[in-house]
Image (cartoon, rainbow, N blue to C red; front, side, top):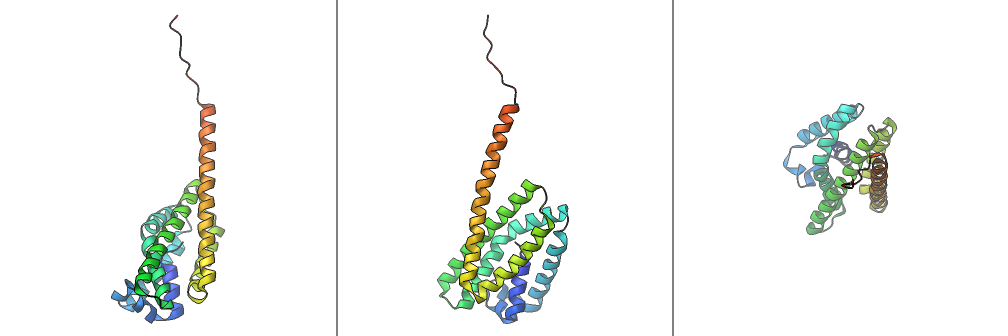
Length: 183
C-alpha cells in the first residue's frame, strides 16, 4: 500500500487538527506535515509507473510501512476515543498488518517481475476506501483489513506451492550421479 497517501487523505478529510492528535505527527507543524505528505504522495504516484521506480519505492515502503501503519492505527483509535493503552496496542497491530501487506506486495512484484498498471490503480482506490472506512465505518474497515490478511495468507500458500513445483522441476532436469562400483 501507499505510505503517504492514507495519512494525507486523513488529514485532508478530517482537518489539520487530527494530525495534532496523532502521537508522532503532533510534534511537527501542520504545514510541514502537509508538504511532506503531498510531496511523497506525488513521488509514490509517479515513481510507481516504471520498474526502477517500483523497486526503489518497495524498499522505502518496506522500511516505513510499519511506522505508517502504527500511525494510522493510533489515529483511528484516538478518533474513536478509546483508552491510551489500547491506542498503543492498536498502533502496534496496525504496524504489523502494514508490514505483512507490504511484504506480500513485494513478493508478488518479484514473482511476477512487474505489477500490472491496473493493479497499481486498484491499490490506490483500495487505499482510499480503506482510509474512509477506517474512520467512518470501523466494522467495514476491519472486514476489509481481514480480507487483505486472508489474501496475504492465500498468497503465501500459493508461493509455497509454486516454490515446491519449481524445486521438483529442477530435480527432474538435474542429471543424476550414480555411485560407480570399483570393479
